Image (tube, rainbow, N blue to C red; front, side):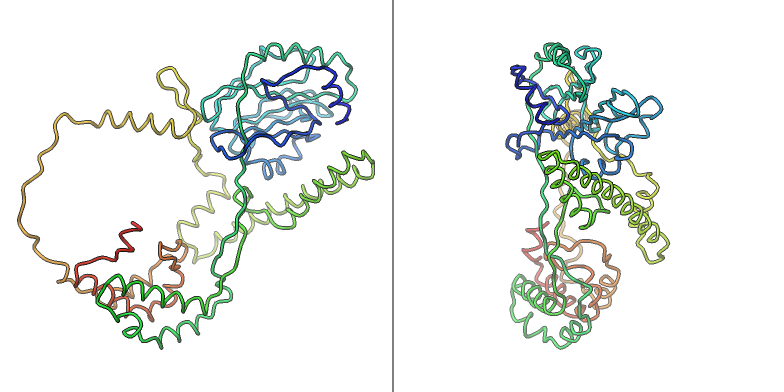
Length: 443
């Protein structure tokens, strides 16, 4: 079907460079440069029944701004709420029946769109939507389904609709947030006893407090502590996939790659055995995704009964499980002076100007003239070791490391072994009335 459809398109000899058309079965070109994140990412998929594949679509296509679906197999008995995707407007639909045909478009909540029914034609499964991108440019997105048994008349209807759409200019680029690798501490393999013994045997006066310069002393402590930690708490490399759902695992990723290879092979050969194999793997992936989602929800639910879980994490999990989370996406659009603004920078600039204008005052307040010296000086304060120890023991181990890269989990674990040098370090800073330059740079 793919080759026949591509051939039919060529025989029409129509140059439609000014609009975007996603037609079922036609492979997309690689596309333009993907570095401009102000533009949109659009995808098309022929799903052969939308309802049973919602989990798969929500998992694999959630990072796209616009999702175009053909062969949705829907009718009036299926409500919009049943096929709604998180983070998207309610679906734009043109249904046929539960056994074939139909097209659907999903548009992200952060985008403004208008359904263009006036450029559609009857007897053709074609949807047009006018969308404003993040640069406030208007363009059309169209999705068409051509049934396998259709005749050449479909192209006459198609040309009629395109003639109405040619006034619209298309300008967009795609982007993707790629996965990356990072190093983290492998706390499961940590030797805390060895770490504590080594810190206990460290002569802090010799390796740290061997200078009168507060910056040198601070850096001596950081280097000594880090080198000791590195010996007893190893690191490991993990892959961060920003586009993945939290329940995704390597088995599902491998199956998806296998499915894509089999699908390409089946389309190329059109061998019934290859198509059978593709359907088997596709159905297996759907089952794996559903099971992974259920396992993930069970894991979250079990964490809710853990008495040691921090309150903040408990509420995050509770909202996630109950679906009571607030919509944290930016408003869909902002209308100002008769114009519609969509890009977050444009909206923030308008709001900033508004609040800046209403906050202006006519006269500047008088600054009091107070030259009296302060009642006390920093060198009069003395920090005790118990105060340092108390602060280390209440550190939140779920918080990320600070600018020095030292994890609060490690600091809390070895609190009683580093409280003494830290007390001396802070008191030295107060006595010389000088903060560490490193802290000033990171604030």
